[in-house]
Amino acid sequence: MYPKFNGLYTTVSGKQSTHWELKNDQDVVVNRGTLDANKGLQSFDLGYTFSEAGKKAYMKKNKKAKISPAANGKNYLPKGTYQLVLKQGKATAKQTMEVK
Image 1 (cartoon, rainbow, N blue to C red):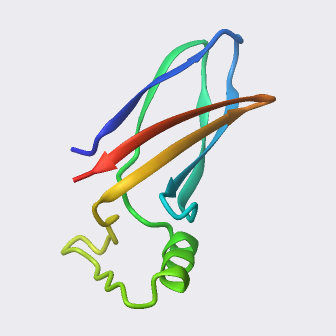
Image 2: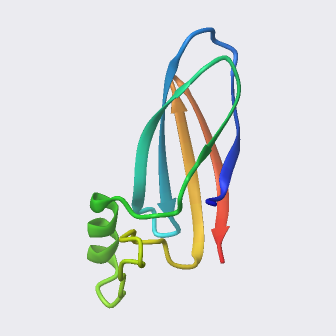
């Protein structure tokens, strides 16, 4: 089971698109996506994996890093500090987290 982010609360009725991105401490976006949020408290699984674009951006900045796929084919993030940025309309929320 992947870590969940519990903390997106929206007061608007109906589905609202919320854009998210996960950045490392070098400000490299390692993954991003969109989720449909309904009124109330939201949670979603981050998975702590690289997107294809995120892996390329990370490798460009960290040329000596070695990222190998796990048995399930996913490329998991290395240990470090990351920031989750949520954007819904004009509102932005940020949460720092650590992968150990």
